[in-house]
Length: 308
Ligand code: HEM
Image (tube, rainbow, N blue to C red; front, side, top):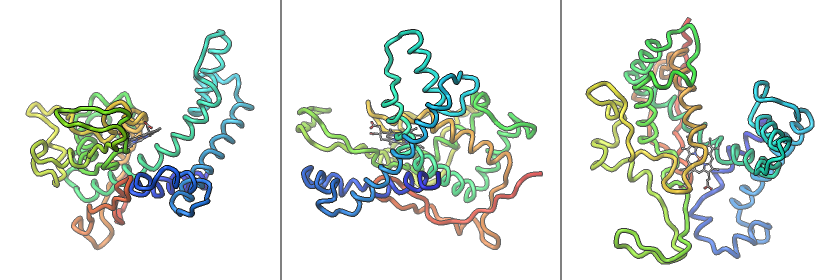
């Protein structure tokens, strides 16, 4: 498992678009076979092999153990998938739920879903440690709605306004995938008077939109309140799109938003986050590092003080 996590963590760091899109396709293919030695290609390939191997192994193990698994006793995504595929088969229905598709789904969850979500979680910890007032307000809402007797669940989401504002503002402020993924126009196109020739790379500048002061006044300030209206309700902004724009928007959005909600609410319910002993909130910087794919937080230290 540790190897799998390492591979998922290493993968995005090898996927530098400047290299991938600046290099002619034929060289890319040669690099894939290690004929032209481009280190980042080789590393990304090794990481992908590792993720694929581990996922395929797990699926084979699950298939042997669990063919009769029902939804109630499913342990994970693979169990659920296999049980859905099995019932489709039994009902003699055509299905896309094949083992091959499952392999693709499982590999995607690790290759695209793990590091992105984990990085956002670390950003949450950083920002909540730095902005103690936000942390306090967030905790007040969680305690008011849920108390301390049980953990938050997804059913609690509608009752929380400030939590959503914090989540949206954190996505805006951080923009963990600042340029999303590059796409190519397959045919000549025109958009708002601009001619876009076939084979042009298109980049969605999510970071630029998230920091456009015509849309978000004082864009470099972290202010969840900007998404709370006078009635104290959360206001969703169509200009905060951390999961991309258009048809190829991130397919993991729903899962990631659920994970982030549970993580953030459980975290502030159970712990007080404080800067390292002897340091203040000023010591925490928000200057992250963009590696060509993701925007990663700088090093920082947080103390997690559990509530009794
Ligand atoms: C905070 C968490 C996440 C963020 C901010 C994020 C963001 C993004 C962005 C910006 C893209 C590019 C969209 C585009 O092409 O314009 C993308 C693609 C993708 N994401 Fe996520 N993602 C997250 C979590 C996940 C999770 C949990 C999964 C899977 C379980 C996932 C799976 C994928 C896949 C497979 C693609 C490529 C889709 C394609 O090829 O069209 N992501 N994501």
